[in-house]
Image (cartoon, rainbow, N blue to C red; front, side):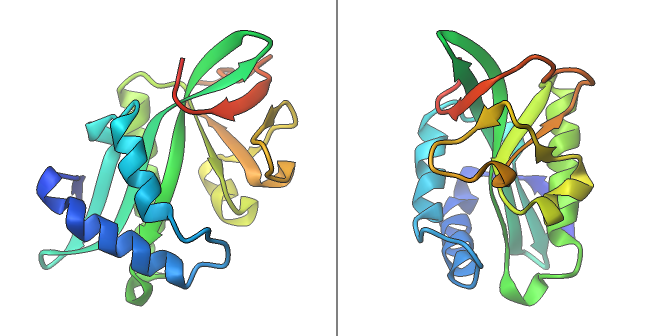
Length: 167
């Protein structure tokens, strides 16, 4: 398996991969593949859209894009990890974990200090994500709104709601 930066010629295959992957997800609103199209029109960071490939076939995808945490007129720039997708037949083989680790390492190398996501704390906790009482996302229970510091102390004293686009 190879992890590499996504290229525009991958976008159709990525769309199909995400759509298929989320058909069997525990939680899905059914439009994750369209959400990626919207994210690419916002604060898109090409270096942080990665794919996992095996024998020329895309088997996984991850994307980190610019987002913000806003409260009372203040704005803190962060990254949103969304979505993470792995083809059904490749799940439970470490593909998702490898994508997360690579994406977070690249984000840190590019100078980003934190990332947020909406997801399962049991899964994402092993990558440094945890619930932060002062950070929320409208309509999502707090235990599923997770954050990770890529720079120690980056989220200290940060409070507010996750928003797109970034600051």
